[in-house]
Image (cartoon, rainbow, N blue to C red; front, side, top):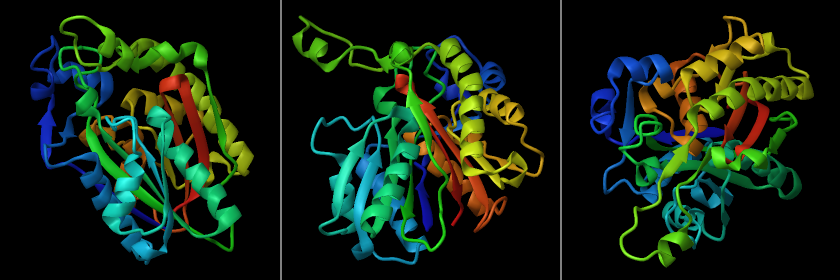
Length: 318
């Protein structure tokens, strides 16, 4: 029903992102497509960013916070084990008595949240706010050449509510736990607690080539299955909005599922970097704001990431 986003003020180019690693602007652009990314400042917490995105989404839906009956936050960069950041978001926007919980599925979290929200509305009614929000810089090792230049911060939100016609196709989702070590926290919290002497703070690590191969080819198959489940040919799409992991992955998936030139392919990663659970709603908001796709059009949403988890569905754009 409505979409909103928040992008941190600070814009970081490749030269700055690469200052502690052996890399360059040319290499980063050629390998990832990233030109800039946004890094949050001290006053741009998860709660602050999520609040701003959420308020915009609620307003775009023509609602008030009193209409929100549930808040789902997709994030893995909330550094408090409990309580859920969703409870803070609900409080910040004054969604009194709304249910609120976090969802952890890495970069696939937002689409998981959307799918759950769809089912909640179908079974209970109401309006569900889904927020993808990340401060990737809190778990970023700027000396790790495989991740230092990739990630950015931000928040995106959508409101999902009742409709007289279906707004989502069937979900295609799953996980391959045999590859859980491909993207992971460098050390678990208990290892940090139990270690003697100084220990490096946990950070996100990944095996880039391994993830690239899995995402580029497995997600093409998942995308095809989602389209088939919804009964939507690729040419009927208005937009393809995948997780913004890498421009080369996005192009490979688009090519393999046979998207014609008439379909807008979101590439928010070029200026936002990989914002994990926030990447799809940020890209969605950018596509709608640009006019490249509009209300009533069909978009294929595909999230994938740590786990290795994935989720895909076709959605009607607000």
